[in-house]
Image (cartoon, rainbow, N blue to C red; front, side, top):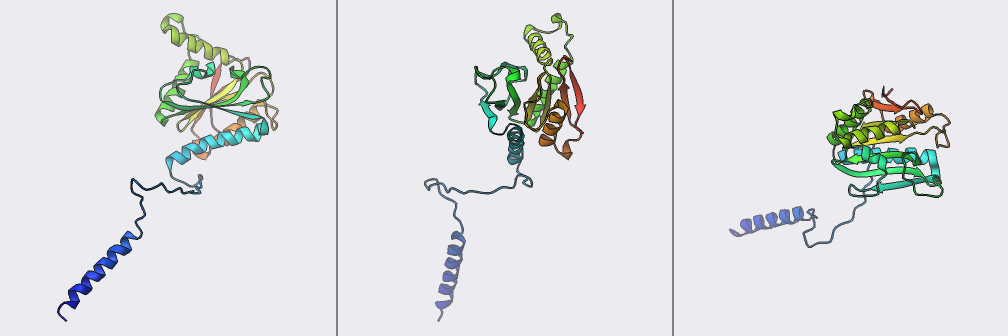
Length: 235
């Protein structure tokens, strides 16, 4: 009878250890990975990467709602050499991926390459600080259109002059999270099935990308022939 109590205690201890390890299903280094499909509500999630990716999903939705099956999607890596020249006007430091959208029916006989060939550009940076720096420099460049050539180096002077040249078409440039976006405008009517005026088209884009928390945000807006960008608040 003296040995029963210690043995009983050992049995209880072993049972507890086995019951705990039963729920430890973390695979070892040699075990095959477990494929899990998780449904995430991107509206309420607090995960930063999901929220940032959601901005790209909003851009996709905007393009699809306006172009339907005519939408064409481009993806450029940071080391790609065939970038549309327009994208070189933005800071290239810390770019993760660049997305561009165009109408697959335009241009008809050549590859989309010029600013006016596209619908929207989304430049994804590695962090929000880099996207803010890129947008701030673009803003500063638009304020220096009358810059004397002797005041800056040749590279900066040429970039500023190209921005000035693009502004004659029109467009909307802004920043949110780790993205800089550029909504392309031309001197024709919007390439959309839903809108016939640029102000209505711009309003739809802003409502698609921004929300109530962005009420203090600023975008640059240029109209056809005005040859300048104007700062505008998000309403």
